[in-house]
Length: 485
Image (cartoon, rainbow, N blue to C red; front, side, top):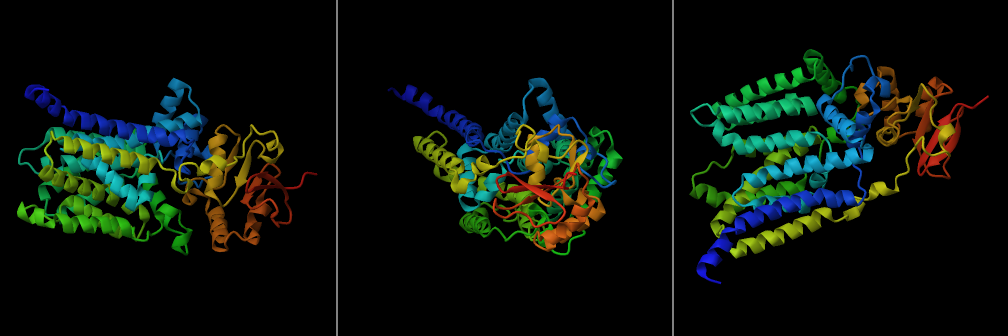
């Protein structure tokens, strides 16, 4: 092969690596979904909501403060996909997981000089903190907010320029508006604004604050009820963290985390490794991105989601940029050694993330659902107008997912704060007493013939609750009803 042909082939290396990175990112969620994976929580209720055609007060028994959908944009998108394609709940889950992961994972490879630096970062996170990688496949709209953060981090340098970067600000405003409409976590965009100011980036902070104000306002307007939207999201936040006597009673994501020691150690190692380079090139050690990562980690001791949804995206962006800089020092962009490294990283990433460690992608395959399609369960499911009483949110997620059009409601849905106050008090007592049967007594007394009480338990452990008759309806699931006369 002559030098000209060899040079032309070498010039294709960056393109080949980019294509490889895109292929790995596209194939990962498809491989995971091929196991039959169904995320264990909100993705199920989002898919069912889109198919049900109902408002939440027709699905749940809710307190009067909750009058509108908490994720109007995401449900509008899923409903449109369902209406256009006619797909069922399982297909909507597939759509959610694949699309949201690809959106998040594709953004960095088009900004970094070395696409494989991003793959190496995902590989490192998958090894040291596998739970964070699993969250990227949950098919939930918070991933769009995380994607907005990644875009902000890459576009941040433009916000520092003297000339107003109108195009960049327009992109950020549109992304924030979409995130507000789809995810409703608008108030937390104050975090990066504060981090800009802490880092001394006054101009960037003010410009991003302007984008956030306009974007959040536009996103709220897209809901059709902006004032109610703002009021309800604030009320939801306050109620979600209130009325608990111990943090263990909160939903898992609102509880404090344990510090994610391995992820923190990874950041510390890279900080020590890269510090000489930063000093040599006069780069600031603590950028707004690094400060947001540190703030998210610190606030994780208040609620885990500060770290998983805000600190973690900042941390992995920071790691990716440091790895990218290191690769620029040691690898020629058109070297075959770079291509070999990219291939090795891609293979390791695909195998490590798609590995069914601890059954993380197949645990749901053994789940038995309560379903109107199962004739053996028919008479034990609620009658039209009935209510399912349960202190386990999993009962709501799984049952609503398989019965989106059923003519009953749930006392507990995806957030305890939405329950009527008296029922929330009953559920908190049940939690406080570790699901003791006596704590269910107020619900048992309220039950009508069309209602059902669903509790967990083994086949040989029939619930001892006087006043109800019981049926072992599915694996680990007992259904109770008032005795038929």
